[in-house]
Image (cartoon, rainbow, N blue to C red; front, side, top):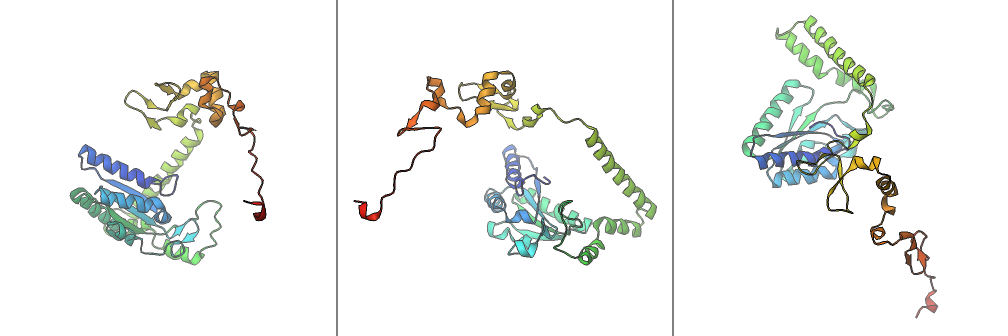
Length: 286
C-alpha cells in the first residue's frame, strides 16, 4: 500500500487486508508505507496495537524523509528513532538506509519472511531525504540549500547506477538510456492524463460500497423501505432528488403526515432558535 489522501488513513486498511489474509488462510502479507509525520497520528498507535494483538502479517514502513510537510522530525516527534515507536505496542522495529536500494530490498525481504513465518507485524524505518519541497508553493525556508546538496550526493538512483556500472552490469550509456526511458514513460503518462476526458459523475461512488455479491458499486440504503435503493435512481426521480437535496431537513415524521415545520417545542417553531429562560440574580433565586 502506498500513499493515501488522509495522513495515516491507510494504516487501518492495512490491518484489514492482513486480517483478510488470516481469514482466507493464505500466506499473503501486507506492506504499508507511511511518512514520518503519520507516525504521530492516532491511527498509527491504534493499528500497531491491533496488529500485534491479532498477530497480523503487516510490514509497516515509515519513509522518514526528515520532514512532515515543512516540520523537521526533531520538531514533530519526541522520539527521532522512529523504528522504536512500535516497541510499546509489541511491534519490533528496525532501520534501513533509505538511500540504498539494496539495503532497503534486503531489509524488506527479511521483514516479509518474519511476518509470513511467525505471523506478527514488523516496523521498518527507511531513513531518506526529500529533495524537493512539499508542494509547488513550498518556499523551503526550513532548510538550507547546502543541506539539500549534501543529501543529493547520496541520490539512491545515482548510487545504484554507479554500483551497477562498477560491477560491469551496465555501462554509462545504458544508465543514460534507462534515465531517458523513465522520463519518457512519465511524460507519456502525464500526456495521457491531460488528454483523457473527465469521468462521469456516476463514477464518484463506483466501488465505494459492496452490499453483497448482487449489489456492487454505488448503492445506498433507503430507510423508507426494506430493500436497497440504487443511488443513480435519484437523478431520475424528482421526489428522491428533493429528499437528497433537503438532507437533514427530511424527517421521518413526513411518513406519518406530519409537517416538520409545524412541530413546536415549548411554543417555538423547530426552524426558529429556542429562547433561553431569563437568568435571575442570586438574591431572587429560591
